[in-house]
Image (cartoon, rainbow, N blue to C red):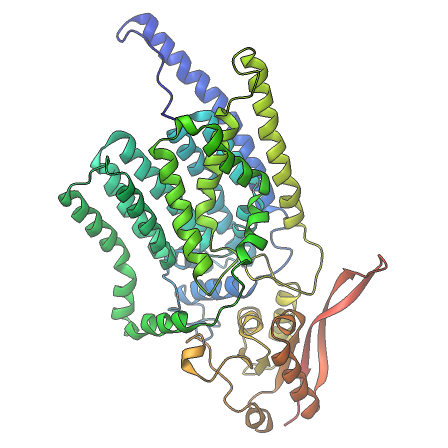
Length: 524
């Protein structure tokens, strides 16, 4: 479906000028209040109880990198600046940490990117299908549980998605206007997307596939060279910083680790976790539009489909899966769903009673929105649990345990944890060195940032490890190492000196405290 045509008016006449001015005022008068409500609703969902639960492992890592960039004396020695990903978002966060920002402030910076994405999705939908579609697409993204949950956390995927949507907008403007300047802009913003998270390279392949399938958009070799030069010039900041810091081998080490990592989830993972969070009604609406509006399909739908399908196939086949990895494709899903909700014909009504048909479509959009709002509200008010899915929120009790460690254990204390997730929280909140039992001594099988415990018995006997941290979340994911940690606790006379518990609902409907983190002091 093409971009809606402008009203037919006589240029240069007073009547035409007044009509254009009135149309602009009316459009702004309708869009601005609507977008204010949409962004306000999205903002409310993203800031509600934002700091109630502390960081999870990934949040602690990115915030720790930002603090190290800011020169924090306590965290600089615990978190290496260079890890698996580029540093654009961490560099932005470091500005806040320089001023004493805490974990909630860091999350607010992620929220800002999330709400900026809502605005960018409106512009994308407006460009492709008109202002009403843009508003509906922004509405879907603003209250979509998947986008809400991820952009409440200090993760790279929220900022990556913002830059990705801007890139998609620039590509669409190029296709609409055939102006190379928009292609150059897309190249520059894609460079920023890659600087946020290097896995965004799969989106480059998606755009390439679109242009291969639609030969009508001819890109001159000179323009292609300029595009490659602009993207490379932006992204080169990351490898250049590695080289200048004598850490050029860091990227190579992480690449080897990523290539040889074992699968962490089944191939059905995204269907079981991400699809419900995106919203079954949104997915059904997006897919249904291809049939209901089949006579109006153009390059616009192909662009959005390529943008969605290439990453979807890649991350389904890639052994390592993360809850938030598919976030950059959901704006395209929202745009397609909004297209159906705004433009699909209503049988028996569209031709005879267009006003009634519009009300039916509005009711459909509100119904889909209601189907998103309820799970989004539940996602920001989760029931206490002793299990945890990485990327879906903070770790209950982690911040409190870390702060107790900082206040209650001697400086220089070294702790053993089940896995690196809790070790990262101990480092960030507790300002103490922590080592995970589950980290493999094989360099090909571990994150290069993590130091393994080569001989736990020797380290415990010699007093190099004085405390052990057991947590229910790591024990549920890796029961072998959870049991092994407890064997060391019993073997070396461990005494529980601090416990963090959460209130959970028992099968009989009552609430009871369940320990989720226990800190033991062991004797050498």
